[in-house]
View 1 (cartoon, helix red, strand yellow):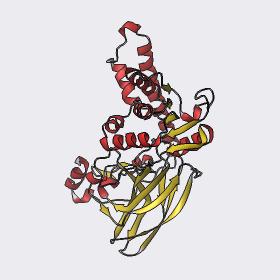
View 2: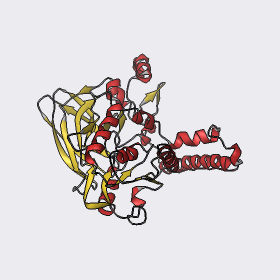
View 3: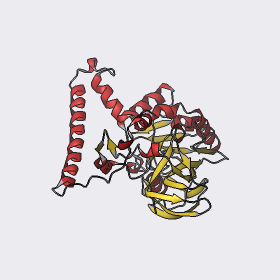
View 4: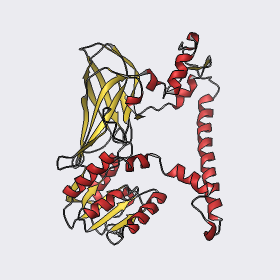
Amino acid sequence: MRHVQEARAMPAEHEARPAPVTMPANGSPYRLGAALLQSLAQEMNALAEQASALLSMPPEELSLDADAFAQIARRNVPRWHFAMLNDIERNTALMTALERGIPAGSTVLDIGSGSGLLAMAAARAGASRVFTCEMNPLLAEIARNVVNAHGLSDVITVIGKPSTGLDPVRDLGGPVDVLVSEIVDCGLIGEGLLPSVRHAREHLLKTDGIMLPSAARLHGRLVSSEAVLKLNQATTAGGFDVSLMNTFATRGHFPVRLDTWPHRFLSETAPLVEFDLARSPLGPGERPLALTATADGEAQALAVWFELDMGSGITLSNPPDNPRSHWMQGWVPLEKPVPTKAGETVALRLGWSDFTLRASI
């Protein structure tokens, strides 16, 4: 909340919103692009130097407490893993769903090992063989160690590959009976749920195999929040126009813990889109939305959240009124603010790629 308080404390003349700075016509777009690539190169070079420093150390001196190791770990293991592992509601729902949904003696593929939690839960639920894949080598090794520490290495195989790189025969011994794919972000699709399931359904799962989850839905409401808007937009600072920073604003959805910011809903909750994970094409697409406004105002975004159907009557969701969930809500910015009038219909289009949600007028 510090940024909001600072903004309110600024003199009135600094609150004005001048027209954005016009980018000079002397090659600035190209220089910005080149600078972006240079930043990427610097980051890659720093990682390479840190990795080289670790590899040059004698094995007996290699310590997980080394600064270089810690820096690499911070880049490679997102902090949300800790919040996720401490999300009791999530863990309980998933454990119960696996216990009820995995037939005894079945083979299971878990996409996205993380700590190995769901793979171990699948083994405990009665699977005879569990394969779990993880594209992050560091997390894959953590999962192997956790699985081994629980004495489950004879049942669970951790494969250090993305699911799209798996060979069904060589890696899995043939298509599996059950696919577990809880790889979702605040807006459902940001971690690659759609392409991962699309591929796994065709190549890695038996034709009569079980999908967990079996369906996924997005819900949402029109929302207005100057505070959240300023998390992804800049106009003036200290009396200077800094709106060129908006070149790098997030165009698609991003996470927001909505109840921590002042906001105003301008429509009731509405279903936005549903994916049948067993049968839907799961490709990029779009659909029209007709949302009935509940108040006069100016909508700046769609606030969205998901609902996963885990079978056996178990659902997992992250609505704004569920502070127990570690998942935040998704903020899908509109191309421009949309005026609303209570009782009238607001027509929008919701589009999705393999990883991103976008809303347009």
